[in-house]
Length: 502
Image (cartoon, rainbow, N blue to C red; front, side, top):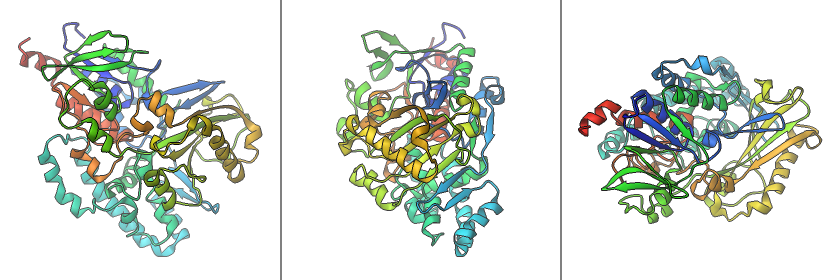
């Protein structure tokens, strides 16, 4: 890459930042990522502790082709850097009464599971699959990698929204197919994986069921961090670089155009354009606090609705728990009321539902020999709940430990040899996420597509946004798609220089 190439500066090395950086480097840009932490990944940061490797955040890969495309642009193959293993079943769902549903890859096996729970819902399941596919074809295949910064895009999408029932909630839509409450839960919990409340998130997110069936659920050997490492290698191969332990304080806007950033400490880094992979609300509320904003003003940001947060407990045991599946939902006694506590009432309830991740079932190298690595993730309200996590976190962790010990992991408390936790405070202070929300803006109908912060910023020319808080939304497929949108909006380096008469 030539030093005279125009300079693209990317704030943050999460999946969105890394993916857009590789894409821009492949288009001839000189790319620098500025990263606050000491290593890449953002929410996908990797923690190494006592011989254990813990993925900080995302663990489920549902659309490998989105990654393959990035590797191809860089003249490489994903399989050279990352080995993906398909999971079958995708995950297990354990209900409070101990009943387990295996979400199987094979359709006949899945039909058998539905029939076992409620034979009368079998026809509804087939209808649900068909409708989930119809939503996927429009909301994901057609719209997820297209920009929504023009109002006409929104207007053109309204007929589909009505036809596909996108104005309903996921839970409401799923209720049209299933009479059994367990099946309603099993087919409606997916929005929680991207920060949404199944009771209020647009039914468009029923597409996740088809996405899983179409592209399967994968795990990256070595953990999701192996994909992060691979993206960093691609970027460096293309001449891009990452500066760690460097935090952006302000995006510099001159004559209405992003011209670089000022770091904490006062250093100025000039650029021809800026892409922010920082939390979208943080980008506008903090990094552009000195720029007059037309749309994303402080009052609009304070009125916005933010996703829930997460409490994550990473732990390692000195024994194997061979009965525990790789991806497991360990549900508590309540569903609708717990969701209302988390999203509406913003109360930290006594009970919880957990996503339990046991990567060592598939990749034993992530723990010392004879040991198992886990993380237990509980959706919790964001910081508007007023919970004092400094004093509460240990008792909450203990309650999770007790629950796992009582249900699926006998003797757990005596088996733990390493432990660490992440609370909403970490999302706020370490990952600089507004209100400690784990997934930025909540994916509701009027905070989706055109209503979300645009990939091409409304506030300054030459400023772009990638990541969970912009279109199309959170989750790895959404975040990686946002990087594609931004890279498609930006001309190749040579065209950019010619257009500016350089």
